[in-house]
Length: 114
Length: 117
Image (cartoon, rainbow over all chains, first blue to last red; front, side):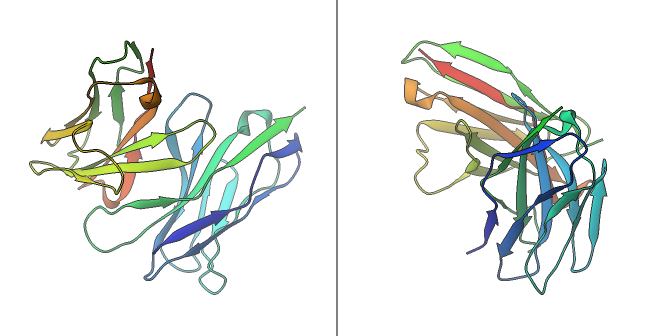
């Protein structure tokens, strides 16, 4: 079945550092890929997405490129801020027509310090 | 657009009582809603998928009689935790999907924290 593997956290960075959170996937079809962010005590918010190979999703300074050849969707940000501290989830959905299930990675906690 | 609300945001109840959590899509018609459970510092576990007007499809290991899901309209789904016990304490999150927003993207509610004493 489909699966998503994320790097284990927590990731602790100083403000303005470069961020990479690795995400790889296995899927039988051509999934859409997502990054969600969860702030403490809140639900998930969509951060960015990509629906086909070589697409780059971007939002709020975060970027991720859909790499079919390496089955990866790594999240990057050039300069993190304290306000970016949260848990980040990589996910995929199988585009087989109607609204389909999301398969989540285990989440990576990011802690940004001054 | 694509706002999903949940009510209540927090609930504390006594063991043995039932608790109902509402999930509403505010600006689109949610043909499909999903219910997740999240344990502390863990990922989301899909509990069930519900399509409007149909019975919910439960994931393996989720008790249908304990977690009752109703999706009677295109904007409302409810999760009722029946005879709640302390081990049911968790963070419950719903999500919704439907046209014309997107058929394969889910929009998440803010979650409901359930504490069973």
